[in-house]
Each structure stands twice: as structure tokens, then as C-alpha cells.
Image (cartoon, rainbow, N blue to C red):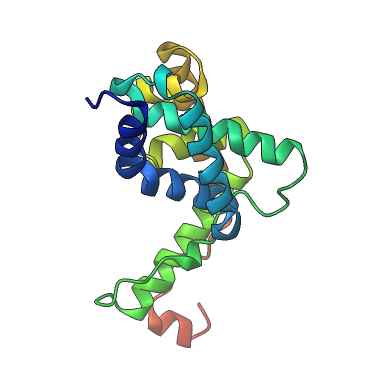
Length: 182
């Protein structure tokens, strides 16, 4: 571990900048994510002596969460919470039909997540997108591991229920489609 605060901060920044930027981008869009990420690292610089290196990534996500909450609270953010699923590059080897089905499924999941409470959204995104463990999520949002596990379980149940309520188009073979689904 480097001795000077500057060296520790440089190491922290180089190791985690891309992850924090991705975290912010998924929540507020690329335009504002650069500023939010800079704010996260400004806070990290001021608190460099308080870093717990074992949980540094979760610590940074906790700071990022606070930075974003402040932006939302003060009204500076009016964009949607989620980035667009359509921004993901399609896999070139897949058939167009597979890409269409996958995009539809992604939109259904995104819509179901957006219908959940913000607290459910955040805990699900920390687990799924950021791939944090329950102890890391607990550290990031400031609750116990037990409470995190309970909230995550309940959020997953609510997501499953929201997905079940999504109306889906029945599967039709090409022949059925030509015959009008009869």
C-alpha cells in the first residue's frame, strides 16, 4: 500500500474510475455521468484516509449513491434513471429474430424494474449490474447484511411479480402468422 495520500488516491482512481463511471452512466446517462464521477472522486480524495481497502469498491459505490441522490434531490437531474437498453451493441452472430426477441425481453425487464420502488431498483441494480455481494451492497447503502439479503430477496420477488403482469405476445410459428394466428 502506498504511503502518501496522493499515491493511494492515484491507485484508487486508476483501479476504480471505469467502474464508478459505468455505475453513474447507467443511472443518469453519459452526459452527466462524467460530472458525477468527478464528484465521487472529489469526495474520495477528501476522505482518502478513511478508505477501507478491503471494501473500497463498495465504499466508492456508496459515495456515488450519495452523489446521485444529491443530484436528484436538488432537481439537477431530470433524465431517466436507466440508460437505454438499445444502447447495447447487438451480437453480430445472432439472427435478427433472436436480436428482436432479446430486445423485447430486455425492454420487458427494464419496464418491470422501472415500475418498482426506487429502493428496490437500487438494490437489484447493485446486485445485477455492479455484481456486488450482499456484504458489499450492505456497505454501499449503509445497512446490515441481513437487512440487505431480505431487501434483495423481496425486491426479486416484486420484480418477478411485475414481470408476470407484463403482457406478452403469444408465440406463433411463421405458418401460424401467415394464417393469421388461427
